[in-house]
Length: 435
Image (cartoon, rainbow, N blue to C red):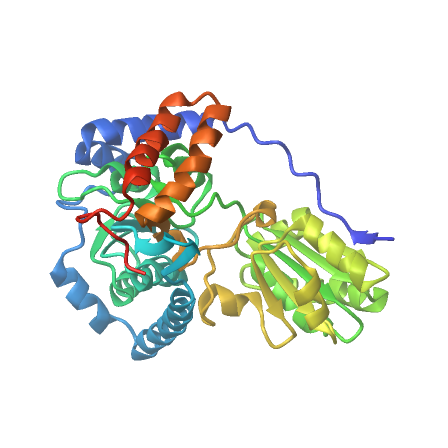
């Protein structure tokens, strides 16, 4: 039976009425006024009203020379890993055609969307990795036009490293604008910016609400909340590493969630002590301390099966498994955004460097969806063709099926083919399907 050594506070139910109304007003104004609407909210929220929101080639060219060479090399390394993994995913999506009955052929085609928009946050931290994840992935999927947006920082333009990351990732257009107005501009377009088909990227509750309201006008990736980590550990786990990994996610946001499920009481207790020790000197302890204090959990369980079941109920964004037999959990667990198997991998690798995408489901959405991948930027479409003999066989059954439902015009579309093809299914000039 699960025994909690530390339990999170009950998260209060948020009243999102103000957020929803504010987002609706911004979206409506940008849809109606275009750049004028973007400029109004950019000046109001970000103290930013440049001559053009589009970042020009001169500024892009100057950025790389201002960055430390090590930073440029590290960004390039991270992007290579993400590009390589996305490419391998793409290879496993394929067109096919099969013959299901004599003369009846069904097929699948993988078609990338024409354009996508990447929103890269720029608040508490410069989110370089978000540029990698949301620009490289659609490019590998075959998206011809990728627009990238990031907000200005203190009214002075976006982080230079973020701009470099966007351009190095392959962004075709870059705009310095943030928040709801940026997402609305990408969805509806404005002067000089044509609308996109899909909008992806992380952000605060206003950004999440904007994606919710824009969905349908454009596709979206997912509706993300504060980041989460859940670690399953046994007696072999190192409390120093467990504590560091929990704090790594706690520093994101005061509302971040962390959970340790331990098969060992001594390891659980030692991790709590170690976490408090590390927290005392952590430069980001103001945020991490609040997050851990309010939303950190430590629970001891009796068996691997119980640990897996509790993890699946939690459905974490990030699942770390630091046990002697992590493969048991890889086979057993079903609900998570991404799993980090063994002490040798950490969520930080996935967030920044290792190659998997860090845009992942939160708030138990891992029960029904995975994270961002090339799949989000392609459409799996189908087609069918038949010989006249094959069409005749299908039509006879389909006519009856339509009539069962009193869809008589549907049935008639079958009957006219039956009447025509039954008379002479192989008449000269008939268009035959290739075998």
